[in-house]
Image 1 (cartoon, each protein chain N blue to C red):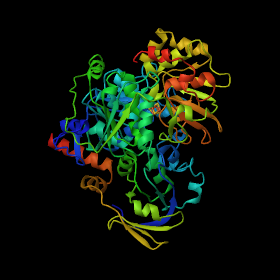
Image 2: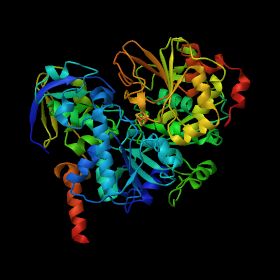
Image 3: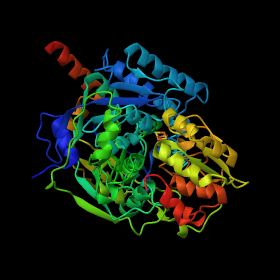
Image 4: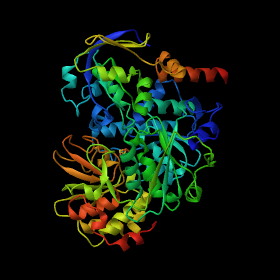
Length: 429
Length: 171
Ligand code: SF4
Protein backbone atom coordinates (compact mmCIF):
# COMPACT_ATOMS: atom_id res chain seq x y z
CA UNK A 1 0.00 0.00 0.00
CA UNK A 2 1.27 3.45 -0.91
CA UNK A 3 1.82 6.45 1.30
CA UNK A 4 0.09 9.77 1.60
CA UNK A 5 2.33 12.83 1.45
CA UNK A 6 2.31 13.27 5.23
CA UNK A 7 3.14 9.63 5.90
CA UNK A 8 5.96 9.80 3.31
CA UNK A 9 7.42 12.82 5.11
CA UNK A 10 7.18 11.18 8.54
CA UNK A 11 8.74 7.96 7.24
CA UNK A 12 11.69 9.94 5.88
CA UNK A 13 12.29 11.47 9.33
CA UNK A 14 11.84 8.42 11.52
CA UNK A 15 13.34 4.98 12.02
CA UNK A 16 9.84 3.60 12.50
CA UNK A 17 7.54 2.23 9.80
CA UNK A 18 5.23 5.25 10.05
CA UNK A 19 2.03 3.38 9.37
CA UNK A 20 -1.21 5.28 9.88
CA UNK A 21 -2.05 5.66 13.57
CA UNK A 22 1.49 4.92 14.73
CA UNK A 23 3.17 7.38 17.11
CA UNK A 24 6.62 8.05 15.66
CA UNK A 25 9.71 9.77 16.99
CA UNK A 26 10.77 12.15 14.24
CA UNK A 27 13.70 14.46 13.56
CA UNK A 28 12.64 18.08 13.20
CA UNK A 29 14.09 20.35 10.49
CA UNK A 30 13.01 23.70 11.92
CA UNK A 31 11.34 24.88 15.15
CA UNK A 32 10.12 28.35 16.08
CA UNK A 33 8.10 30.38 18.59
CA UNK A 34 6.79 33.94 18.77
CA UNK A 35 6.69 36.74 21.34
CA UNK A 36 3.75 35.14 23.20
CA UNK A 37 4.81 31.50 23.10
CA UNK A 38 8.59 32.09 23.18
CA UNK A 39 8.97 33.17 26.80
CA UNK A 40 7.10 30.17 28.27
CA UNK A 41 9.01 27.90 25.87
CA UNK A 42 12.28 29.34 27.17
CA UNK A 43 11.15 28.64 30.73
CA UNK A 44 10.20 25.04 29.94
CA UNK A 45 13.52 24.62 28.11
CA UNK A 46 15.40 25.57 31.26
CA UNK A 47 13.20 23.36 33.44
CA UNK A 48 14.14 20.47 31.15
CA UNK A 49 17.74 21.06 32.15
CA UNK A 50 18.69 21.82 28.55
CA UNK A 51 21.49 24.27 27.94
CA UNK A 52 21.82 24.48 24.13
CA UNK A 53 19.24 24.41 21.36
CA UNK A 54 19.84 21.46 19.04
CA UNK A 55 20.90 23.66 16.11
CA UNK A 56 21.09 27.48 16.13
CA UNK A 57 20.28 27.77 12.43
CA UNK A 58 17.15 25.67 12.80
CA UNK A 59 15.67 27.27 15.92
CA UNK A 60 14.06 30.68 15.75
CA UNK A 61 12.11 33.19 17.77
CA UNK A 62 10.06 35.87 16.00
CA UNK A 63 8.39 38.86 17.65
CA UNK A 64 5.19 39.40 15.67
CA UNK A 65 2.05 39.25 17.81
CA UNK A 66 2.02 42.20 20.20
CA UNK A 67 4.89 43.98 18.45
CA UNK A 68 6.00 46.72 18.15
CA UNK A 69 5.35 46.16 21.87
CA UNK A 70 1.86 47.40 22.67
CA UNK A 71 2.29 47.88 26.42
CA UNK A 72 4.68 47.23 29.31
CA UNK A 73 3.59 43.67 29.92
CA UNK A 74 4.09 42.70 26.27
CA UNK A 75 7.43 44.51 26.23
CA UNK A 76 8.61 42.45 29.22
CA UNK A 77 7.43 39.26 27.56
CA UNK A 78 9.14 40.07 24.26
CA UNK A 79 12.31 40.94 26.14
CA UNK A 80 12.39 37.55 27.85
CA UNK A 81 12.15 35.80 24.51
CA UNK A 82 14.78 38.01 22.96
CA UNK A 83 17.22 37.45 25.82
CA UNK A 84 16.81 33.72 25.47
CA UNK A 85 17.39 33.89 21.71
CA UNK A 86 20.54 36.00 22.22
CA UNK A 87 21.89 33.70 24.88
CA UNK A 88 21.34 30.70 22.61
CA UNK A 89 22.66 32.42 19.50
CA UNK A 90 19.59 31.20 17.65
CA UNK A 91 17.73 33.01 14.86
CA UNK A 92 16.01 36.21 15.95
CA UNK A 93 14.93 39.26 13.97
CA UNK A 94 14.08 42.61 15.50
CA UNK A 95 10.98 44.64 14.67
CA UNK A 96 11.53 46.34 11.31
CA UNK A 97 13.25 43.27 9.90
CA UNK A 98 10.71 40.59 10.64
CA UNK A 99 7.10 39.90 9.71
CA UNK A 100 4.34 37.57 10.74
CA UNK A 101 6.12 34.26 11.29
CA UNK A 102 4.06 32.29 8.75
CA UNK A 103 4.72 34.82 6.01
CA UNK A 104 8.32 35.62 6.89
CA UNK A 105 9.78 32.12 7.39
CA UNK A 106 8.76 30.72 3.98
CA UNK A 107 9.91 33.96 2.31
CA UNK A 108 13.34 33.55 3.85
CA UNK A 109 13.55 29.90 2.86
CA UNK A 110 13.45 28.40 6.37
CA UNK A 111 10.46 26.19 5.61
CA UNK A 112 11.08 23.91 2.64
CA UNK A 113 9.49 21.04 0.73
CA UNK A 114 9.76 17.70 2.53
CA UNK A 115 10.56 19.32 5.91
CA UNK A 116 9.10 18.59 9.30
CA UNK A 117 8.53 21.97 10.94
CA UNK A 118 7.14 22.64 14.40
CA UNK A 119 6.00 26.05 15.54
CA UNK A 120 4.53 27.21 18.81
CA UNK A 121 1.61 28.74 16.93
CA UNK A 122 -1.41 26.96 15.51
CA UNK A 123 -1.04 28.50 12.05
CA UNK A 124 2.31 26.81 11.54
CA UNK A 125 0.30 24.64 9.16
CA UNK A 126 0.77 27.48 6.62
CA UNK A 127 4.11 25.90 5.67
CA UNK A 128 2.12 23.02 4.16
CA UNK A 129 1.84 25.15 1.01
CA UNK A 130 5.46 24.17 0.34
CA UNK A 131 4.85 20.46 0.75
CA UNK A 132 6.25 20.45 4.30
CA UNK A 133 4.69 18.74 7.31
CA UNK A 134 4.42 21.94 9.27
CA UNK A 135 2.29 21.90 12.39
CA UNK A 136 1.49 23.89 15.51
CA UNK A 137 2.25 22.84 19.06
CA UNK A 138 2.28 24.47 22.49
CA UNK A 139 5.28 26.07 24.16
CA UNK A 140 6.38 23.03 26.18
CA UNK A 141 6.30 20.78 23.12
CA UNK A 142 8.36 23.37 21.26
CA UNK A 143 10.85 23.63 24.11
CA UNK A 144 11.39 19.87 23.93
CA UNK A 145 12.08 20.17 20.19
CA UNK A 146 14.60 22.96 20.79
CA UNK A 147 16.28 20.75 23.38
CA UNK A 148 16.16 17.40 21.58
CA UNK A 149 15.80 18.17 17.86
CA UNK A 150 12.99 15.67 17.72
CA UNK A 151 9.37 15.15 18.73
CA UNK A 152 6.57 12.63 18.52
CA UNK A 153 3.95 12.72 15.81
CA UNK A 154 1.08 10.37 15.20
CA UNK A 155 0.72 9.47 11.53
CA UNK A 156 -2.70 10.94 10.77
CA UNK A 157 -5.25 9.73 8.28
CA UNK A 158 -5.49 12.08 5.29
CA UNK A 159 -8.43 13.77 3.62
CA UNK A 160 -7.55 14.37 -0.02
CA UNK A 161 -9.02 17.57 -1.46
CA UNK A 162 -9.05 18.05 -5.22
CA UNK A 163 -9.93 21.26 -7.02
CA UNK A 164 -11.07 20.82 -10.58
CA UNK A 165 -11.88 23.08 -13.46
CA UNK A 166 -10.84 26.65 -14.17
CA UNK A 167 -10.78 29.20 -11.37
CA UNK A 168 -12.65 32.45 -12.11
CA UNK A 169 -10.66 35.58 -11.18
CA UNK A 170 -12.97 36.45 -8.28
CA UNK A 171 -12.23 33.12 -6.59
CA UNK A 172 -9.14 33.38 -4.38
CA UNK A 173 -7.41 30.87 -2.15
CA UNK A 174 -9.49 32.28 0.70
CA UNK A 175 -12.76 31.45 -1.04
CA UNK A 176 -11.47 27.93 -1.74
CA UNK A 177 -10.49 27.16 1.85
CA UNK A 178 -13.60 28.78 3.35
CA UNK A 179 -15.73 26.69 0.98
CA UNK A 180 -13.98 23.56 2.20
CA UNK A 181 -14.40 24.45 5.89
CA UNK A 182 -18.02 25.36 5.26
CA UNK A 183 -18.55 21.92 3.78
CA UNK A 184 -16.64 19.73 6.26
CA UNK A 185 -17.03 21.90 9.45
CA UNK A 186 -14.50 23.13 12.01
CA UNK A 187 -13.82 19.57 13.08
CA UNK A 188 -14.13 17.94 9.68
CA UNK A 189 -10.43 17.05 9.65
CA UNK A 190 -9.75 16.79 13.39
CA UNK A 191 -6.65 14.61 14.09
CA UNK A 192 -6.24 14.32 10.30
CA UNK A 193 -4.15 15.89 7.56
CA UNK A 194 -5.52 17.65 4.51
CA UNK A 195 -3.73 17.02 1.21
CA UNK A 196 -4.49 19.43 -1.64
CA UNK A 197 -4.17 18.63 -5.31
CA UNK A 198 -6.00 18.54 -8.60
CA UNK A 199 -5.60 20.37 -11.89
CA UNK A 200 -7.50 23.35 -10.51
CA UNK A 201 -4.52 24.37 -8.42
CA UNK A 202 -1.87 24.05 -11.11
CA UNK A 203 -2.09 27.75 -11.87
CA UNK A 204 -2.86 28.81 -8.34
CA UNK A 205 -0.26 31.36 -7.17
CA UNK A 206 1.87 30.41 -4.15
CA UNK A 207 0.33 33.23 -2.11
CA UNK A 208 -3.12 31.69 -2.50
CA UNK A 209 -1.74 28.28 -1.55
CA UNK A 210 -0.36 29.75 1.66
CA UNK A 211 -3.83 31.09 2.45
CA UNK A 212 -5.36 27.66 1.94
CA UNK A 213 -2.75 25.81 4.02
CA UNK A 214 -3.02 28.50 6.71
CA UNK A 215 -6.63 27.66 7.48
CA UNK A 216 -6.22 23.87 7.58
CA UNK A 217 -6.25 24.16 11.38
CA UNK A 218 -9.67 25.82 11.18
CA UNK A 219 -10.95 22.47 9.93
CA UNK A 220 -9.22 20.85 12.90
CA UNK A 221 -6.39 19.46 10.77
CA UNK A 222 -2.85 18.79 11.91
CA UNK A 223 -1.58 20.27 8.68
CA UNK A 224 -2.70 21.02 5.13
CA UNK A 225 -0.13 19.97 2.57
CA UNK A 226 0.18 20.72 -1.13
CA UNK A 227 1.87 18.18 -3.35
CA UNK A 228 4.97 20.03 -4.60
CA UNK A 229 4.90 21.09 -8.26
CA UNK A 230 7.03 23.36 -10.43
CA UNK A 231 5.67 26.49 -8.75
CA UNK A 232 6.55 25.14 -5.31
CA UNK A 233 10.05 24.11 -6.30
CA UNK A 234 10.75 27.38 -8.06
CA UNK A 235 9.62 29.33 -4.98
CA UNK A 236 11.67 27.13 -2.64
CA UNK A 237 14.84 27.00 -4.77
CA UNK A 238 15.02 30.74 -5.15
CA UNK A 239 14.83 31.25 -1.38
CA UNK A 240 16.16 28.11 0.34
CA UNK A 241 18.34 28.72 3.39
CA UNK A 242 19.55 25.09 3.24
CA UNK A 243 19.18 21.87 1.24
CA UNK A 244 15.85 20.08 1.00
CA UNK A 245 14.30 16.93 -0.41
CA UNK A 246 10.73 17.21 -1.65
CA UNK A 247 8.46 14.23 -0.94
CA UNK A 248 5.43 13.02 -2.85
CA UNK A 249 2.40 10.82 -2.20
CA UNK A 250 2.12 7.46 -3.96
CA UNK A 251 -0.54 7.09 -6.61
CA UNK A 252 -2.17 4.32 -4.56
CA UNK A 253 -2.08 6.26 -1.29
CA UNK A 254 -4.95 5.32 1.02
CA UNK A 255 -7.14 8.34 1.77
CA UNK A 256 -9.68 8.38 4.56
CA UNK A 257 -11.95 10.51 2.43
CA UNK A 258 -11.99 12.62 -0.72
CA UNK A 259 -13.52 16.05 -1.22
CA UNK A 260 -13.88 17.41 -4.72
CA UNK A 261 -14.60 21.00 -5.70
CA UNK A 262 -15.42 22.37 -9.12
CA UNK A 263 -13.96 25.84 -9.39
CA UNK A 264 -15.89 26.92 -12.48
CA UNK A 265 -19.11 27.76 -10.71
CA UNK A 266 -17.61 29.14 -7.52
CA UNK A 267 -18.15 32.66 -6.22
CA UNK A 268 -16.80 34.71 -3.32
CA UNK A 269 -17.84 33.39 0.10
CA UNK A 270 -17.68 34.68 3.66
CA UNK A 271 -17.62 33.06 7.11
CA UNK A 272 -20.26 34.81 9.20
CA UNK A 273 -20.03 35.22 13.00
CA UNK A 274 -18.92 33.34 15.08
CA UNK A 275 -17.39 30.33 13.40
CA UNK A 276 -15.10 29.77 10.40
CA UNK A 277 -17.50 27.11 9.14
CA UNK A 278 -20.53 29.43 9.03
CA UNK A 279 -19.82 29.96 5.34
CA UNK A 280 -22.20 31.40 2.75
CA UNK A 281 -21.94 33.03 -0.69
CA UNK A 282 -21.27 36.73 -0.06
CA UNK A 283 -24.36 37.65 -2.05
CA UNK A 284 -26.54 35.61 0.32
CA UNK A 285 -25.32 37.29 3.51
CA UNK A 286 -27.77 40.21 3.44
CA UNK A 287 -25.12 42.96 2.96
CA UNK A 288 -24.74 43.85 6.66
CA UNK A 289 -23.29 47.28 7.46
CA UNK A 290 -19.74 47.31 8.79
CA UNK A 291 -17.54 49.53 10.96
CA UNK A 292 -14.11 48.20 10.08
CA UNK A 293 -12.21 46.32 7.40
CA UNK A 294 -8.93 44.56 8.16
CA UNK A 295 -6.71 43.41 5.30
CA UNK A 296 -3.70 41.50 6.58
CA UNK A 297 -2.77 38.60 8.94
CA UNK A 298 -0.83 35.44 8.15
CA UNK A 299 -3.84 34.38 6.10
CA UNK A 300 -3.99 37.27 3.63
CA UNK A 301 -1.19 39.75 4.16
CA UNK A 302 0.97 38.54 1.25
CA UNK A 303 1.82 40.36 -1.92
CA UNK A 304 -0.99 39.07 -4.10
CA UNK A 305 -3.50 39.83 -1.35
CA UNK A 306 -2.32 43.41 -1.01
CA UNK A 307 -2.13 43.75 -4.78
CA UNK A 308 -5.64 42.55 -5.56
CA UNK A 309 -7.11 44.71 -2.79
CA UNK A 310 -5.16 47.76 -4.00
CA UNK A 311 -6.20 47.26 -7.60
CA UNK A 312 -9.83 47.09 -6.56
CA UNK A 313 -9.51 50.24 -4.42
CA UNK A 314 -7.59 52.28 -6.95
CA UNK A 315 -9.32 55.63 -7.46
CA UNK A 316 -12.03 54.79 -4.91
CA UNK A 317 -12.63 55.94 -1.34
CA UNK A 318 -13.23 54.00 1.84
CA UNK A 319 -16.86 54.56 2.91
CA UNK A 320 -17.11 57.53 5.31
CA UNK A 321 -18.20 55.49 8.35
CA UNK A 322 -15.65 52.71 7.88
CA UNK A 323 -12.11 52.30 9.23
CA UNK A 324 -9.97 50.32 6.81
CA UNK A 325 -6.70 48.94 8.21
CA UNK A 326 -4.14 47.40 5.88
CA UNK A 327 -1.17 45.50 7.33
CA UNK A 328 1.30 43.81 4.97
CA UNK A 329 2.51 40.59 6.58
CA UNK A 330 6.24 41.22 6.09
CA UNK A 331 8.68 43.88 4.93
CA UNK A 332 9.24 42.05 1.68
CA UNK A 333 5.54 42.51 1.01
CA UNK A 334 5.53 46.03 2.45
CA UNK A 335 8.40 47.16 0.23
CA UNK A 336 7.09 45.48 -2.90
CA UNK A 337 3.69 47.09 -2.31
CA UNK A 338 5.38 50.44 -1.77
CA UNK A 339 7.38 50.11 -5.00
CA UNK A 340 4.22 49.34 -6.94
CA UNK A 341 2.40 52.32 -5.46
CA UNK A 342 -0.17 50.14 -3.67
CA UNK A 343 0.38 51.65 -0.23
CA UNK A 344 -0.33 55.04 -1.75
CA UNK A 345 -3.57 53.74 -3.26
CA UNK A 346 -4.70 52.70 0.21
CA UNK A 347 -3.79 55.94 1.94
CA UNK A 348 -5.38 58.00 -0.82
CA UNK A 349 -8.53 55.91 -0.43
CA UNK A 350 -8.53 56.83 3.26
CA UNK A 351 -7.20 53.56 4.70
CA UNK A 352 -4.60 53.21 7.46
CA UNK A 353 -1.47 51.32 6.48
CA UNK A 354 0.49 49.86 9.41
CA UNK A 355 3.80 48.15 10.04
CA UNK A 356 3.87 44.33 9.73
CA UNK A 357 2.37 42.67 12.85
CA UNK A 358 -0.46 40.33 13.78
CA UNK A 359 -2.09 43.43 15.24
CA UNK A 360 -5.87 43.23 15.43
CA UNK A 361 -6.08 39.62 14.18
CA UNK A 362 -5.99 38.24 17.72
CA UNK A 363 -7.38 41.33 19.40
CA UNK A 364 -3.87 42.51 20.19
CA UNK A 365 -3.66 46.11 19.05
CA UNK A 366 -4.05 48.48 16.06
CA UNK A 367 -7.72 47.95 15.36
CA UNK A 368 -9.62 46.50 18.34
CA UNK A 369 -13.41 46.39 18.06
CA UNK A 370 -15.89 47.96 20.49
CA UNK A 371 -19.13 46.27 21.57
CA UNK A 372 -21.60 46.22 18.72
CA UNK A 373 -18.99 46.82 16.02
CA UNK A 374 -18.72 44.60 12.96
CA UNK A 375 -15.60 43.98 10.89
CA UNK A 376 -14.89 42.28 7.58
CA UNK A 377 -11.49 40.69 8.05
CA UNK A 378 -9.11 38.69 5.89
CA UNK A 379 -7.84 36.81 8.97
CA UNK A 380 -8.67 33.23 9.83
CA UNK A 381 -10.78 33.13 13.02
CA UNK A 382 -14.03 34.85 13.89
CA UNK A 383 -14.53 33.38 17.35
CA UNK A 384 -16.35 35.44 19.97
CA UNK A 385 -14.08 38.24 21.16
CA UNK A 386 -11.25 37.40 18.77
CA UNK A 387 -10.72 41.01 17.62
CA UNK A 388 -11.83 42.78 20.78
CA UNK A 389 -15.14 43.06 22.57
CA UNK A 390 -17.01 39.76 23.07
CA UNK A 391 -19.99 41.71 21.72
CA UNK A 392 -18.31 42.55 18.40
CA UNK A 393 -18.73 40.56 15.18
CA UNK A 394 -16.21 39.33 12.65
CA UNK A 395 -16.85 38.26 9.08
CA UNK A 396 -14.02 36.40 7.32
CA UNK A 397 -13.52 36.97 3.60
CA UNK A 398 -10.95 37.37 0.82
CA UNK A 399 -8.95 40.57 0.24
CA UNK A 400 -11.13 41.30 -2.80
CA UNK A 401 -14.33 41.01 -0.79
CA UNK A 402 -12.79 43.01 2.07
CA UNK A 403 -11.72 45.81 -0.27
CA UNK A 404 -15.13 45.91 -1.97
CA UNK A 405 -16.78 46.08 1.45
CA UNK A 406 -14.50 48.90 2.58
CA UNK A 407 -15.65 50.94 -0.40
CA UNK A 408 -19.38 50.34 0.02
CA UNK A 409 -19.53 50.19 3.82
CA UNK A 410 -21.38 46.86 3.68
CA UNK A 411 -20.33 43.28 3.15
CA UNK A 412 -20.06 43.26 -0.64
CA UNK A 413 -19.33 40.75 -3.39
CA UNK A 414 -16.42 42.20 -5.40
CA UNK A 415 -18.32 41.46 -8.61
CA UNK A 416 -20.87 44.05 -7.52
CA UNK A 417 -18.30 46.85 -7.70
CA UNK A 418 -16.02 45.68 -10.51
CA UNK A 419 -16.63 44.51 -14.10
CA UNK A 420 -15.74 41.01 -15.21
CA UNK A 421 -12.67 42.10 -17.13
CA UNK A 422 -11.11 43.46 -13.91
CA UNK A 423 -10.94 39.91 -12.56
CA UNK A 424 -9.62 38.50 -15.83
CA UNK A 425 -6.76 40.97 -15.73
CA UNK A 426 -5.68 40.28 -12.16
CA UNK A 427 -2.25 38.68 -12.18
CA UNK A 428 -2.33 34.99 -11.40
CA UNK A 429 -5.65 34.53 -13.18
CA UNK B 1 -1.76 9.08 36.65
CA UNK B 2 -3.53 10.64 39.63
CA UNK B 3 -5.83 8.78 41.99
CA UNK B 4 -9.62 9.01 41.91
CA UNK B 5 -11.27 12.39 42.48
CA UNK B 6 -14.69 13.97 42.29
CA UNK B 7 -16.30 17.36 41.83
CA UNK B 8 -19.14 19.32 40.37
CA UNK B 9 -19.56 19.62 36.61
CA UNK B 10 -19.80 22.82 34.57
CA UNK B 11 -21.19 21.98 31.17
CA UNK B 12 -20.48 23.75 27.88
CA UNK B 13 -21.26 23.00 24.25
CA UNK B 14 -19.24 22.05 21.16
CA UNK B 15 -16.20 23.87 19.76
CA UNK B 16 -15.20 25.73 22.93
CA UNK B 17 -12.21 27.61 21.52
CA UNK B 18 -9.02 28.80 23.17
CA UNK B 19 -10.06 32.45 22.69
CA UNK B 20 -12.94 31.99 25.12
CA UNK B 21 -10.98 29.70 27.46
CA UNK B 22 -8.39 32.47 27.84
CA UNK B 23 -8.79 35.63 25.71
CA UNK B 24 -5.66 36.96 23.99
CA UNK B 25 -5.79 40.17 26.02
CA UNK B 26 -4.51 38.14 28.99
CA UNK B 27 -1.63 36.49 27.13
CA UNK B 28 0.92 38.84 28.61
CA UNK B 29 1.45 36.35 31.43
CA UNK B 30 2.02 32.61 31.45
CA UNK B 31 1.56 32.21 35.19
CA UNK B 32 -1.27 29.74 35.74
CA UNK B 33 -2.70 31.46 38.84
CA UNK B 34 -2.90 34.77 36.96
CA UNK B 35 -4.44 33.13 33.88
CA UNK B 36 -6.83 31.13 36.07
CA UNK B 37 -8.59 34.33 37.16
CA UNK B 38 -9.89 34.88 33.62
CA UNK B 39 -10.66 31.28 32.69
CA UNK B 40 -13.75 31.00 30.43
CA UNK B 41 -14.44 34.72 30.88
CA UNK B 42 -15.79 35.38 27.38
CA UNK B 43 -18.28 32.52 27.45
CA UNK B 44 -19.23 32.52 31.16
CA UNK B 45 -17.95 35.55 33.00
CA UNK B 46 -19.00 34.17 36.39
CA UNK B 47 -17.34 30.79 35.94
CA UNK B 48 -14.35 31.46 38.15
CA UNK B 49 -16.50 33.07 40.85
CA UNK B 50 -19.08 30.28 40.89
CA UNK B 51 -16.86 27.21 40.69
CA UNK B 52 -15.03 25.52 43.57
CA UNK B 53 -11.62 23.93 43.56
CA UNK B 54 -11.80 20.41 42.15
CA UNK B 55 -14.80 21.09 39.91
CA UNK B 56 -14.57 19.97 36.30
CA UNK B 57 -15.38 21.32 32.88
CA UNK B 58 -17.50 19.04 30.70
CA UNK B 59 -18.02 19.84 27.04
CA UNK B 60 -19.04 18.52 23.65
CA UNK B 61 -16.91 18.05 20.55
CA UNK B 62 -13.65 19.74 19.62
CA UNK B 63 -12.89 21.31 23.00
CA UNK B 64 -9.90 23.66 22.87
CA UNK B 65 -9.98 24.36 19.14
CA UNK B 66 -8.17 27.42 17.87
CA UNK B 67 -4.80 28.66 18.92
CA UNK B 68 -1.80 26.72 20.21
CA UNK B 69 -1.71 28.75 23.41
CA UNK B 70 -0.65 26.51 26.26
CA UNK B 71 -2.18 29.26 28.36
CA UNK B 72 -5.56 27.52 27.79
CA UNK B 73 -4.90 24.32 29.77
CA UNK B 74 -2.83 26.40 32.22
CA UNK B 75 -5.79 28.76 32.83
CA UNK B 76 -8.06 25.77 33.49
CA UNK B 77 -5.53 24.31 35.93
CA UNK B 78 -4.96 27.72 37.48
CA UNK B 79 -8.69 28.20 38.07
CA UNK B 80 -8.58 25.01 40.16
CA UNK B 81 -10.36 22.60 37.82
CA UNK B 82 -9.52 18.96 38.40
CA UNK B 83 -9.98 17.87 34.79
CA UNK B 84 -11.83 18.34 31.50
CA UNK B 85 -14.19 15.70 30.14
CA UNK B 86 -15.26 16.19 26.51
CA UNK B 87 -16.74 14.26 23.62
CA UNK B 88 -13.53 15.13 21.74
CA UNK B 89 -10.60 17.51 21.93
CA UNK B 90 -8.82 19.65 19.37
CA UNK B 91 -5.40 18.22 18.58
CA UNK B 92 -3.08 20.89 19.98
CA UNK B 93 -5.11 21.31 23.16
CA UNK B 94 -4.90 17.53 23.67
CA UNK B 95 -1.10 17.57 23.39
CA UNK B 96 -0.74 20.67 25.54
CA UNK B 97 -2.89 19.23 28.32
CA UNK B 98 -0.78 16.09 28.53
CA UNK B 99 2.39 18.17 28.43
CA UNK B 100 1.38 20.50 31.26
CA UNK B 101 -0.35 17.86 33.35
CA UNK B 102 -4.03 18.85 33.02
CA UNK B 103 -6.01 15.58 33.16
CA UNK B 104 -8.34 15.22 30.17
CA UNK B 105 -10.79 12.47 29.32
CA UNK B 106 -12.33 11.84 25.95
CA UNK B 107 -15.70 10.18 26.48
CA UNK B 108 -18.66 11.17 24.28
CA UNK B 109 -21.17 9.18 26.36
CA UNK B 110 -20.17 10.77 29.67
CA UNK B 111 -20.05 14.20 28.05
CA UNK B 112 -23.58 13.75 26.73
CA UNK B 113 -25.00 12.56 30.07
CA UNK B 114 -23.40 15.09 32.41
CA UNK B 115 -25.14 18.41 33.05
CA UNK B 116 -24.10 21.48 35.02
CA UNK B 117 -24.36 20.76 38.73
CA UNK B 118 -23.97 16.98 38.46
CA UNK B 119 -21.57 15.31 40.90
CA UNK B 120 -18.98 13.45 38.90
CA UNK B 121 -16.31 11.01 40.08
CA UNK B 122 -13.34 10.06 37.91
CA UNK B 123 -11.06 7.08 38.45
CA UNK B 124 -8.20 7.44 35.94
CA UNK B 125 -6.60 4.12 36.84
CA UNK B 126 -9.78 2.10 36.53
CA UNK B 127 -10.72 4.20 33.47
CA UNK B 128 -14.18 5.15 34.70
CA UNK B 129 -16.30 8.29 34.90
CA UNK B 130 -19.29 8.11 37.23
CA UNK B 131 -22.17 10.55 37.08
CA UNK B 132 -23.27 10.23 40.72
CA UNK B 133 -26.24 12.54 40.30
CA UNK B 134 -27.69 10.35 37.55
CA UNK B 135 -26.26 7.04 38.79
CA UNK B 136 -24.47 6.21 35.54
CA UNK B 137 -20.91 4.96 34.95
CA UNK B 138 -18.91 5.24 31.72
CA UNK B 139 -15.68 3.68 30.52
CA UNK B 140 -12.86 5.83 29.15
CA UNK B 141 -10.57 4.40 26.48
CA UNK B 142 -6.95 4.22 27.73
CA UNK B 143 -4.22 6.48 26.31
CA UNK B 144 -1.79 5.08 23.70
CA UNK B 145 1.23 3.40 25.39
CA UNK B 146 3.63 6.22 24.49
CA UNK B 147 1.29 8.80 25.99
CA UNK B 148 0.93 6.69 29.13
CA UNK B 149 4.70 6.77 29.41
CA UNK B 150 4.67 10.55 29.02
CA UNK B 151 1.90 10.96 31.59
CA UNK B 152 3.54 8.66 34.13
CA UNK B 153 6.83 10.53 33.69
CA UNK B 154 4.84 13.54 34.98
CA UNK B 155 4.47 15.38 31.66
CA UNK B 156 6.82 16.45 28.93
CA UNK B 157 9.29 18.42 31.05
CA UNK B 158 10.46 15.48 33.21
CA UNK B 159 10.31 13.23 30.13
CA UNK B 160 12.58 15.54 28.12
CA UNK B 161 14.91 15.95 31.10
CA UNK B 162 15.30 12.18 31.24
CA UNK B 163 15.98 11.96 27.50
CA UNK B 164 18.65 14.64 27.77
CA UNK B 165 20.32 12.84 30.66
CA UNK B 166 20.32 9.58 28.72
CA UNK B 167 21.97 11.34 25.80
CA UNK B 168 24.60 12.92 27.98
CA UNK B 169 25.43 9.52 29.46
CA UNK B 170 25.51 7.96 26.02
CA UNK B 171 27.85 10.64 24.68
S1 SF4 C 1 -1.83 36.88 12.08
FE1 SF4 C 1 -3.38 36.16 13.49
S2 SF4 C 1 -3.60 34.00 13.08
FE2 SF4 C 1 -1.70 34.67 12.12
S3 SF4 C 1 -0.09 34.22 13.61
FE3 SF4 C 1 -0.77 36.32 13.94
S4 SF4 C 1 -2.39 36.19 15.49
FE4 SF4 C 1 -2.07 34.14 14.68
